[in-house]
Amino acid sequence: MSSNSGNVTVDGVSVQLTSAKGAFVANLADGEDAYASQNISSNIGQVNITGGSLQATALYGTAVLNKAGADTKAVQNIASNNGCVACQ
Image (cartoon, rainbow, N blue to C red; front, side, top):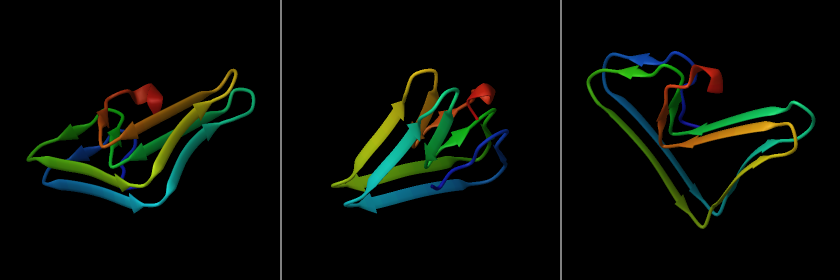
C-alpha cells in the first residue's frame, strides 16, 4: 500500500498516503522459513530521496497486525524509510 521496495531512488517530490477506516491490515509469516514483508506508506532498501518526501498513514478504527511464527520473519514498516537491503 503506497509503498516502494528495493533500491528506491526518487529525484523529485514523493508523496505516499494511505488511509483506512474500519479495516484490518495483517502481515503474517506462517510455516517453516516463511517471510512476510509489509510496507505501508513506506520506502525500504537503500532509499535515496532528494527534494522532499511526505509519507503519511491515517488509520481510524483500524487494527494493524504483524505476526511471525516459529522460524519465520515478518517485517512491517508504516510511514517509514528503511535502508535495510536484506529486509526486502
